[in-house]
Image 1 (tube, one colour):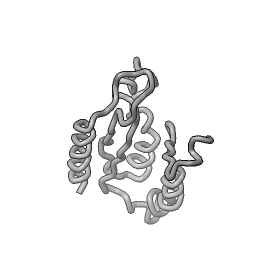
Image 2 (cartoon, one colour; image 1 turned 180 degrees about the vertical axis):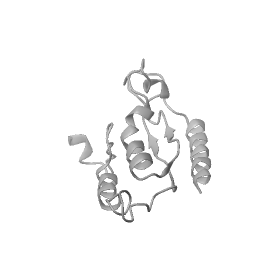
Image 3 (cartoon, one colour; image 1 turned 45 degrees about the vertical axis):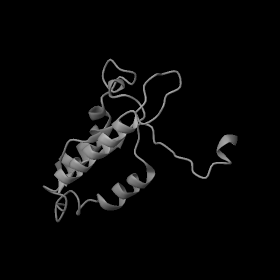
Image 4 (cartoon, helix red, strand yellow; image 1 turned 90 degrees about the vertical axis):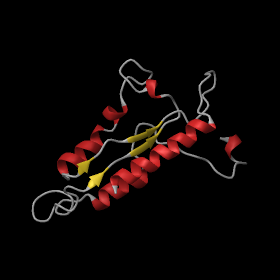
Length: 130
């Protein structure tokens, strides 16, 4: 932790989990009687919903035979279950940006061109939701 004391910014990742602020949003907004359930629980019904995620490693690491043994779709299944089946939202495929970090001991990392392409892909992803 000593090396972070002099940094102006520390980036925190939420490994295989929901960030606390998003969890708070779920708890505050996805309530019975508003987002799901009888008597008015239809506010997200048929509304487009999608997730955008980033990871520092390659896409190949997220598959049954990869480093993490799970696909992103499997890891995001609780979100899909909540939004698609409880809230009856129009749950769309997620957007993923892979390989943003340089992993010590590995040759692979995203170059500027790949990052720029991912940014363009994200814009198209977001526009498709509107």
